[in-house]
Every structure is written in structure tokens, then in C-alpha cells.
Length: 396
Image (cartoon, rainbow, N blue to C red; front, side, top):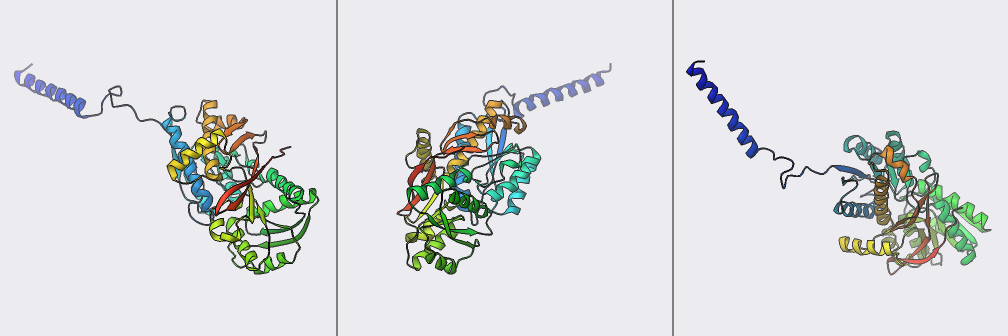
């Protein structure tokens, strides 16, 4: 070997050694070195709800409840070692938007579950997409029929109209003596058209009499004709099965026509704009049912109320509570299944029994329908929602 070749070889070896040294100093540290832990793996949950538009009063507090639950879970170690990330897109309460968002969550964001929507019609759209793609969805508000029937990846954790409305009608007729009942339905609102027959069947079963059967459409603003008919119908009470905006406008017209009437409805009336739009016309004149009240809280609910008020500076409502519970129900299912694969944990989720959530106790029946009790009757006092009464649910 020549001396010139030996010199060249030595130079090459020195360069290799120097490169290794600099790589060790300036490159990535070994995984077991202090301060260089590998990043935690993440699972994603997709939020379904409106943050703008006509039903944003449901989605905005729901998002807050979901965010709070995820923050708490991550602060306590996550789920099976995974940190949880929420993905929050605004579906604006529109079917085309929720369809696009659900597909994005599944194909691009790779969520393991979706939480929402509060509206029955929107949940059905997203539920079909979830079922077809084998992703769990749990609605934190959909109360109408035909939701869990979509398939075994579809759940909900809300008080069902099928149980709540008959309980409320029994209270109306047998406790309040309101036997002559007017009914107004919003014909372009799927929630309303599904709820009306539930109320009508319960009224007939309890021996009540429907003295007026009228209709409106969402986004109409002039209800003079319907309220004039109501004034002359001899009704003891009005059952309105639509949403809070139209309820407030109807009661404004009742006040304008100067007669006394109480409006009773479902949890579609649960929106802060009801009081803002209706003001004195709705004070102690509107009663709706739901599965949550911040009054008379359980121990679990009291802790939630304090944390929520501290974080957001306001009281939670039914939607914030039910989104919060939905995240924790998903957590329990994953931990019980020891898996974050929806194909695996959906089976454990279906077994949920007497879950002590902040929105009440929840059990899933064999058909995955939730049983929640009691029914909270809510009215408005001084511009705020207030518990009027709690009544039991007959889930037989």
C-alpha cells in the first residue's frame, strides 16, 4: 500500500468520524435522554354542531362542554395513553355542510368518533356516513325517531321525546288541568314534524282534546293569523313543537293580541335567544322539557357547574352538559374495551348502564336507545332558565 493511498484513507476515516460526532451533537437526541421523550400519540374526536346560523344556540355551548371534557381527560393522562384532540368545524345547521364535515373528519382527520349533532335531521345525515365508514357517532341532543335505527355505530345520550312528551302531557292534563290543547307545528322543521305526532298520541291517550291544529314554517316572522285562531279556539294551553326563535315570535304576538296563554314544547326551545327575543312575553309563559337543569344538582353536576363557570364565566346548559357527558361515555367505552378502534369499543359502549353523568343517569337499552330520568320542566324567570319541576319518566 503506497504512502499516498494511506494518507487518503486516513483523511476519509477522519471525515467519517467528524460527521458522526457532529451528528451526535447537533442531530436528534436518543429517545431515552432526559427532555427528549417521544411525542404522545393522539386520537381525534370530531365535533358536530352549528357555531353560526339559526341553531348555533345548541352548538356553541356544546362545543364548550366537549372542549372542557377533552382538557380534563388530557390533564389526567388521556385515554389508554393517548392524548385526545377535538376537531371543531361549523356545520351551520345545514345538511350539505354536515355531510361534507363528517366525510372530512373520517377521511382526512381520521377521527375515531364524532360527537353531535343536537338536531335529529342533521344527526341522521352524519349517522349514515358514520355507519357506512364504521366510525362511532354519539348525538348529544337528537331526540326524534329513526336515529339509532341507522346502525350499530350510532348512539345518543339525550332524553327521548318518546318518553318525555307523554310524561309532560300527563302532567299538563292531570296536574294542571289543561285538557283543551292547541297544537302548532313547523312544517319545514324535521324536529317539529316528528315531535307533533308524539304529543298528539299522548294527548289522545290521556283523554285530552285538540281544539286547534295549526302550522307555520321556520323563518317566518308574522304569526298574526295563527295566533288569532289560537285566541278564539278555547285552548287551555298551546303545544308548539318547533324551535326557540319561532316560539318567541309566537308569544310576542300573543302578548300583542292581549290574551293569556302558556306555550309548552320540547328541548328545541332550549336556546338563550328564547328569552332575548321574547322578553316579557315568555316570562313564566313558556315551559319546555329537557334532561338537564343546573338547579338542584347532583354531586357530579355540582363539580361540573363550578368548573364550567370558572372556565367560561357562565352557566352551562343541556347541550354543554350532554356533549361533556358524550366525551366521557366514549372514554369509558374505549377503556372498557382496551381499544381506541371503533370496531371494538362500540360493543362496550352499547353495554352502558347507569352512567352517572352531569346531565343525569344514562343507560343504553338493547337497541342502544338511552333511558334518562327525570324530565326537567324549565321556564323563564327574570330572563333566565329556571327549573319549574322534575317529573319521572316511564320507560316501559
